[in-house]
Length: 515
Image (cartoon, one colour):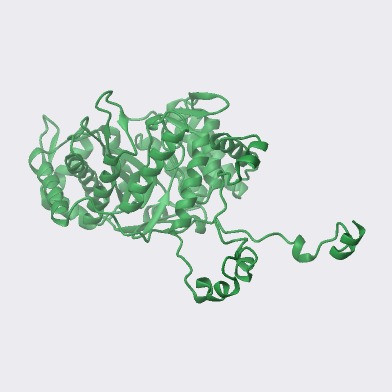
């Protein structure tokens, strides 16, 4: 033992190189570019046929618009509006002009410059689950969402760079609807510097949220209106209907220069034709109607072409996600979005009721449909469960693992002479190995992606360490992430101003949503 210690140096003493922190691979996935070849579902002439049929639907059949102010704006722009049936028929020239003025790419401003997100082109952004009323985890099961759950999901979103935007999150059922928007926006502004989501639930609530964002970002109304600082999600009532709050949301956000993700939810065989081509045609018509309302409200208003086309289980009527039809629908939606040159929001989903194998493969197939289809925004990409009725803490972490792997896949490969490695190949004798090769030793610490959840040890090592499944490991990771969370710095004066605003608006009774 003494001889070995003398040969290796005194026990406990190590060189500076040995004690220095090991290099780590960067996981700053803040700017992602999708270099993949876009996968088509249709030939170019069939894409044009779908587009022309959608224009015909709007021109001849029309769309029912329940909001009187929206009907007035359509009529002022030249649409044929029936005051009795509330049907609005849009001349194709009006729609084509709206397409022309809708921007093809723009930036979404965040609380710090490095969190800015570009929407359009080859850029891609991921966001978490949006809008379920329930939360679940392995410790407590499924239960109604609370404000604390909302805050926890915001913290998780802030903690992982691969989730680029704040999302609708989970609805805090313990907060009355007339003040819920105040607590949710306050949490977004104080726990994250990523760009926020705002519910479109009427002018009063939207004004409150816009005011809080301006306070947090330190901008006046003119600056706020000049560039988008937040976004909302607009869902049409398929088939062929725009309801009161969704119309109001399109107008409120367009008037303020903020982003609307206009998204028909077309389930083949239920709210849309049973064929994917037919469902996409209906979805295209509805999205164009929403885009047109935004552009007649304010030409150049930032919008995203939304897509959420899938099929139903024809035995039960339940929505299905991650199916072959969902994937091909995403390919087709991407083609239609590119056809009109508007950034595209895709959707990621699963019908699974637990963070199990079904949840993983349906989510992953949904992601691939969007990725190969060229989606610029992937909504519900982390934490979605039970067809969107539940947000899962464990699945959020499992999905982050998948998103980080996708983000790594998008990184360009090094094909320099050094990377090609002729000298490394020459160094190792036939039948040898590259573990100790100079080429390996120079690179091994940062050569490969290091997993967040996956356990790559052999069966014996895994068993000796408790034989934990991935969902159990994800449970540990989200708890550790929350325990170690530190919010981004925010000026105390801004926090005080937000506090005063929320206290005052709550004392005034908040604002009921429109319906």
